[in-house]
Image (cartoon, rainbow, N blue to C red):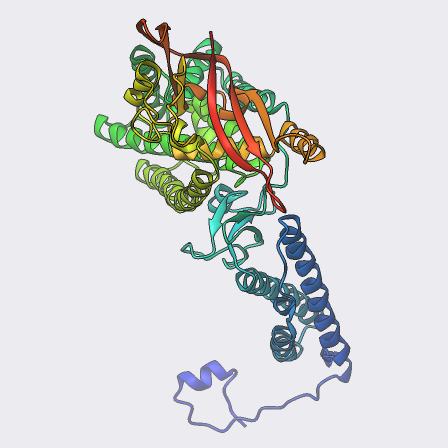
Length: 539
């Protein structure tokens, strides 16, 4: 037996001694329980996957059915995926069941089941959509405070399955709870069944007003109150947003935007160079949010975005505009609410945060713009075959061609006096000629009209008269409703003064309180074709 009082003394003295260690028998009452992985748990997990797969198939098939698309039932098969995920669950759950603490083991197995079930649903959803030919999806978040800023920015936007996100499509990122809903199949928009509300203009105005009010509230709390300035700045911002501001208004807006620098100075006592760099980062983010709204407005009119996403963007941009004018505290509060934290950060960290947010928006805009461009090009080509509207009333028709049409009777379709529709006859000289200035706006206007109650009513009435009258019908809607609140940048027209034989010059068409006229023709077994579509001003 050792003469040392402790093992520590024994080791310090070289460990040259004999030592006797006595062990007491374990108390059987202290033996820990272990979780046993019952086969019923694995079976229940497999049943859960079957239910998730059935619910997912129901949602996908409903989207395609609304678009009148036949569904390949082979895409429904998920037996292989269920078997693979059930096996993975069984193996990992068996290992977790060996934990010493029963409560911990049960919680871990539950978490494992939730994680694998989400992974299964994400993979099956993507595989099914791609198999069925769905080329694009709508990014949906859980719309709660846990959604990470990068994913909140993608919420309700349309993206291609071929797009490249650093963290993957919905559901692939770490702890990502987002999901992907089908959006486009072979050029057919699956969202377009939702009609436009008749009070859309009022809803947009209300969203903007709410954004301004929220910013004003935050500013008043911070002891700042410049209500007239924020209203004026936001008004100028929206005129610039849609390209209708005058040079004087743009100069005023740029002067007001200098408040960005003062807002940043309120964050910390910074040197002039740092303020300049930080201001540039703010401006980049500011412009990215406005560019996102411009694109989203077009996407909505094409049927590629939801009303909820559009109104939220109008609200957020109005809020950002107002906070830019109101100053430092309101601006930092705004950015935090929009997912960009700059308060209590170093200037460098704040710049990195702002530029990262701006780059995220730029990346999203690039991907979504590619989707819009491809769809617009395809749809515009279809409309050009259906009728003569694009050839006479779209952006490829220049202002000079409009003038030649009203003064000389030259048809933009042929480039001469011969009519492009009535073969062998001279083109009738109109008093007024007009155009929509881009393919995207033209396609968006046609898409918008097709989703209105007025279109459906006129179409259904025309169908009742088949065999009695010519199978054509006309839809006339306010120009602001069809083209958006700042329609002036999207339309152009000229009016002849005097008669055809004695013209006295031309004047620009005033489209305020104008309308958009669209003529459609019924076709057997399909949706009506567009004959023509053009903006009309007031005399």
